[in-house]
Image (tube, rainbow, N blue to C red; front, side, top):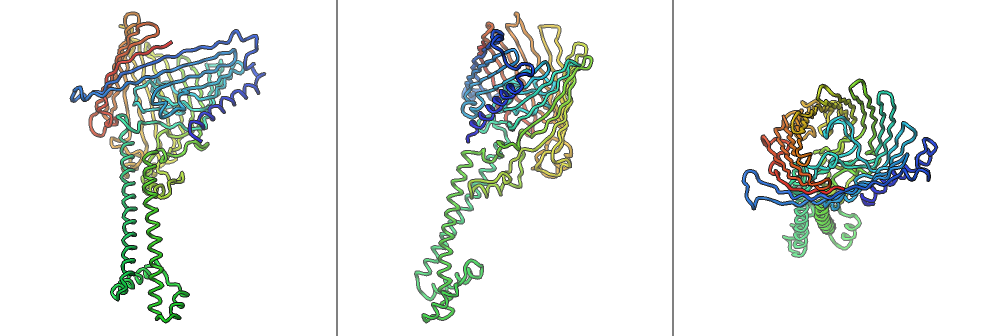
Length: 561
């Protein structure tokens, strides 16, 4: 069954399951609407269309022939039907990338929501859920993956990949207490461009490495085929000569093949030749010669088959590189978690637990050659033979936000527990911690707001990672990774003109990304935007080095209704 069909079926099953629960618990709080309540229900329709003209500029040498243009049209449609005790939401997004590569994500979200009594809400469908108090930056938001095919340019929620899930929330009036549980049977993995300017260096290196190794395997198959052909031709030529010299050479060949264990002399055939007047030596050589000829013919057939399969499977691997990834469409890769949030005085607090998987695969370098050998010979491999794997993890989280003077302060902390507690397995992620802290404040001029956040992580047992440069956690710049992100927004002329600048700097990796933006709200529906991105990297070990030449400017128009 195709992936999109399975995805739609899974989403439909969850939606239908939600409907079934609504029917089963119909007396609990009156899920659904009576005919007398139909006037209170309504359908809300909203959406829009966007077109962006993006020009990539080589900042070191600005010339007309160095500017690459890209036109990015997109559209979205949001439908919401609200009843007294239930809601249905359907969000659609349409763009070229989604249609070509992930048509299942044309349905961006499809959610059925029911309210049972005063305190319990149940949701099911294809959803995006955000955990954590951060502002578009999080270390606790684990259920949905990210789509980085257009780098970090889209807004946070627009990058998130929705997945079928069930979510229950109990809201109690005491201390604004909310208890939340989520289960999703699927693992959405992070997506990256596989070609073009936003392809990560790791993807390019892995693709080039696999191609190189596949060529080596193919060259070996060609060499085996040529050797088999040469051996077969040599034996046939010696047999055809019929001279004492040829017979001596043939005798030497078959005797060596016998000594190597490649062939054996059938005693029955030797005895038959001896009865016909041959000596035992002559009879043995003749039987071995016939066996050797059969062996060489079989060897030639096997070598030809090996070459044919290797070539065909190498082409298949190139055309469909997804075969190297684990099959995530099994219940093994389900995710679940629970979260509690409450208010204590002026502080909003929360704790959470997540049980699931890393969204980016680890590379087991020790399996690469055996994987290619199996795949190129058979065209298929077992799951345990694959050299890419998604590591299991549990995340224990804390979060809080409050107001201190004029500052809105927020923070998140995560402890990630994996199967490699001691850090001695180079192919599995080590335990780690991650954090986020920041604030925003309204400035006393130009309707300005300043938002500053710091997000970071630390990998335990970095000394073990240093023993193997192929370790999945190996860090050339160490085992902390901190980034500071600042955003400032202003507005003029009753919000008609809205300048904005976002700056991100990676402390250890020496990356600088600057994203200016100027929006002009022509009317309540139409917005014209000029924006851009500048990327600077401190050295060759910078995290964003492969994208250093991707600075751009863009013009966009957006119509929302």
